[in-house]
Length: 436
Ligand SMILES: [Zn+2]
Ligand SMILES: [Zn+2]
Image (cartoon, rainbow, N blue to C red; front, side, top):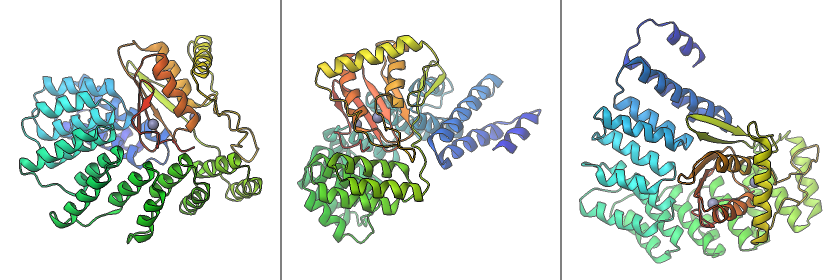
């Protein structure tokens, strides 16, 4: 990409095809990036390119719009996404089904289900991808009934669902704990549509049983299916076992997760946290030794928030670059108020973060800083959008729920695993999203 940039900057005349190649190139780099930081960097580069294209006077086309909207989705950059939306109107591309679908997708991924469904309703033609995107969006936002209703509408107009549509349908059932419906749709998929179930379908069923606390049934599916369970399944099991206090199965699942992910620092911290809370010190030192042997580094905890075209990034305990005192004060106040409302800080577990055995403090995780910064620098009318490089810890998850009550703000955090939309003390993930 660096070489491409050099060539590009040396060109005297640039055609739209070249602009598109550059934007798509950055978008692709974003997908291929190994960590959140470089992914974010590539995303910002793509947005810059799009801005430069606009300034050059050339008109974007379908390809430009669909790649830049994908970038906005991955960056959870709602404001930029809205600007792109208004450009699709100005340039007459809004009626294009590919652009429309990309818009629905962008709004869904940025946590704005209302705008996604408005864009969906306004589309004159829809493809299977459009339907599937909206069904999945409803499911991810915990709007199970709407997801299933839309699925029935889709069948009514004669659109044939594919395996991804069924992932959306099954996850809607899973969110709402609708076991009978889920199993019926699973059968419908196999028998009526002749779709062979894949990993993701089983993952939804496992997730459903886990959420209901029916851990044995979840475990049965893992044992019976034709696939080796993947890391998402094991992490679902871990989350479920922890919240339903089945420690033995939880440790087993976490160790399986570690086997699949031997280089992942998140998994080690998770396992350490679990052993520490159970007071199993022998296991604690065993895991610590493993971390040393495997040369497991620090967790790369970063969060970003974009406000008015600028992106601000935060590291844990990192001093605010702007309004330092004010933000520090606000965070301290919020923690205090949240505690008065029942928030129990898990910041003092004494879990180590790295070989040097420093305390893994949860007080200043990056999303707490980014959210505080967002509260200070955005108007009350807009939701706060934060993107985070690793998964949220339970402490921050619980804290942000309180913040959403205390400030009456909608807070959306996309972490490395999923989207969390906090409204009035509830999260759309149903509390099964935070692992650490
Ligand atoms: Zn945290
Ligand atoms: Zn959540």
